[in-house]
Image (spheres, helix red, strand yellow):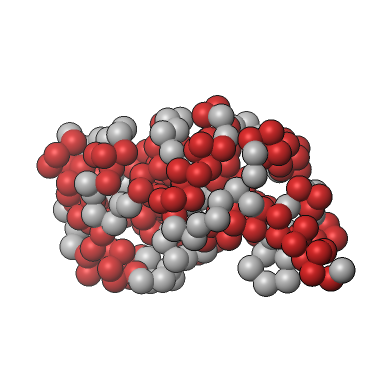
Length: 218
């Protein structure tokens, strides 16, 4: 897909999913620390499940220092409602301890430093930088972004790193901060994993998947 068409897709999705007050996160957080911890916990888990354990978790461990003093076994009961809670308890305690020991109790503001923390890969680092700091050096590629990007025709790859590079090359840098939010919103409502709602799609005429489907149907 060429940039002109991609930008038209972007404009239509932005009109359909307006960003109110600059809020582009599906997870409820108040501080960079909360953004980091909740994003680590959100892997392979719904945002609803993560938001449901938020208050109890931060009531007990409101700061990196408090969480760093905990043992993973003490944290587990508070996050039992999310997937892979045992390994994630180790990740968030380990991340908090590293924040205290290596970063003065502050969440670092570079993708390289964030990726040095337990449980933080490039996707998580991109999300934290964008949502907590307003820094956009890349585009977070999750399940929805991967599926929707390939269907629309933004990329031919299924590899998250390749998809991110393709998206970054396709869209101007000022759009990077919104891409993840727009494609997730679109993927949840319209371009679902099963039975995408072509009849309600605002970009059907620009979508490679839909055009291929019409050709197959004759």
